[in-house]
Length: 130
Ligand SMILES: [Zn+2]
Image (cartoon, rainbow, N blue to C red; front, side, top):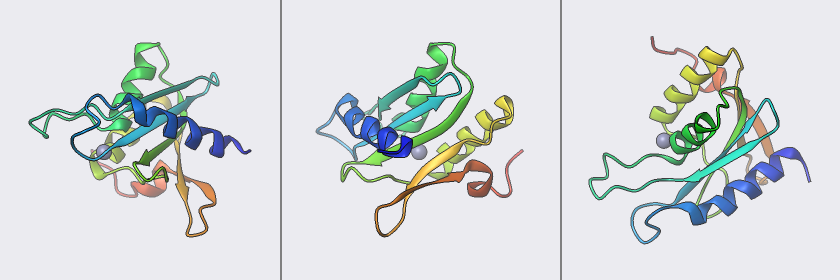
């Protein structure tokens, strides 16, 4: 089992952390820090929808809550338990995190054969703002 497999497995386990599993799409995310620690979260649903925290946002906040700001890799999964690519808002947040830490964060993705690989956030956000 590769470290990417382990991250995806942790992310799948985190699906049960979604606060309202009966509403909205289910997503979860795990972050791996430079110190080797793993922090995960499910998405945090709001009835307003617009206030829902995406799993990537919640997982980064979970790591920050433990004083961990050097994320090296992230894996997010949907209810089908396969890696999903972060949405544009999350890409922005991850890119900003990467800019502050100086670490080009790796995002776990799956190819059509369900083999996992890493795409760096700098490749997902080629023209960042600001
Ligand atoms: Zn998102």
